[in-house]
Length: 525
Image (cartoon, rainbow, N blue to C red; front, side):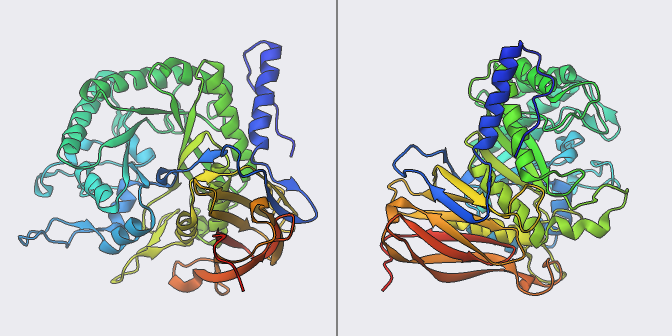
């Protein structure tokens, strides 16, 4: 695919050309080649891995309000019989079992720009009601910072906090007011860490402050960020920070190159890690995955252009946008498209692409909640246990098969599905450190079964029984909002017979997310 030229480059012509070449090379590493067949081929497995994945590669954007509305059970009692509330046990058990080490981003995205943590701590009976989000009436925060940290502990996760750089629903606060609040919050979180609760792994400096309805210029964002960052460091010298880079130009007079370069330059003495938000697969607001990966590559180059030598990216929000979303103020009739099987294909496709991009250190799906709004990852039926949405079912399958070392590979695909990205199929292969076991993640967007030729040279001439797990809809319904079993993961044993070149053919189900766990010791008879 031909990618767009670099816009807004402020360097000399030769430097701009070098940036364009670097972006094209980065994007090319995850590109799927157009072909009249489906294949996924490894290079020499003894080479250095392209990327090393850790448990924190998986994560969740946790919007406190939406999370509290469905996953907080106010009837839960303490051992002494006092009503203290708690996260629904089924949700805790599911996350603990399936996502050890995952990252939980609190208090969420746009909610964080208005969140007053000071009225969300202490005994629940003493907390006062306050308008904490723009779209709801004043209320009490039951799932405050302390409850959040206990939840992260209980699920075996990692904490991530979005610092408030804006103010509250009444309006903007001064830099001094924000710094005072952030410093006190950092001291509170440090005290909780010293008492045995999880520490904050990263502080994210604000959320989409250059976008509607705030529209701050990069100079203002970086100035507020520097003030808040200094206050947090004063309270906790071990704090680490992440600042936001654009994937598209949100301000009419400022290109992404200018915005990202100014943010990275202003904060680079402390900040080397960056957040990005990627929503995909639903035109006009969600472009195909490969265009979003191009935006990541472009942002990496922007940071490098101002002297940040090894920028890391954390995609702190990602998800599928249904086609036509946001075209009207009320697009609730499309909400199911954010969490159905089609969304699961998009989420899996994105995670595979992210795994192939070494600069991406973590991803946080939007969003961890079970409300009636868009992007739920859990569903909470009345009087029953919560269960995973289709997107979560797919993520669970990928996480279960994950191995740490992403190997160099090339992928080729037809485009029977007419997907805007130009392909049906994408895959990634991983191995353990000893290169004895292998795992493959794959997605098939086509409505047809496809036969894929996998090439793993180290397995030539072996006939193996392979653990095959596939996620797809089980009937006509593409979502499991109403019926848990409408989208399911099915475990099978597949036969992979590798020829003398290390090639084996496997059939993938229509519109499915698949994983293969390959152990050369599992010789088939």
